[in-house]
Image (cartoon, rainbow, N blue to C red; front, side, top):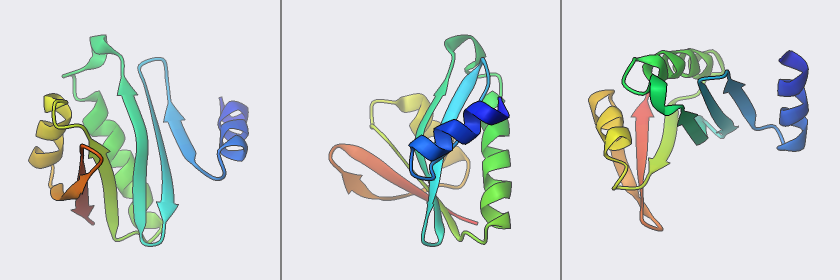
Length: 106
């Protein structure tokens, strides 16, 4: 898996990926922010706490990289995602092209 991860990172101009058979998440560092680009959890694993565990790892990495924020976006109709963000310390930063932009200060 490490070789695949390295290959992905080279193809995507430094975007990073974490993945397994149950999920994937891509992200990049821009300035003092770790920005979540895309995330997916298979339906069978939703509601199990898997995504929360993944985000704890991402937050730890962001802190180690001296990021001050984690930014992410979601469409308002993605109620599960919106609920996760608001329950876990993310604040709405704005709206861009019908997506809510969330930010969490680390």
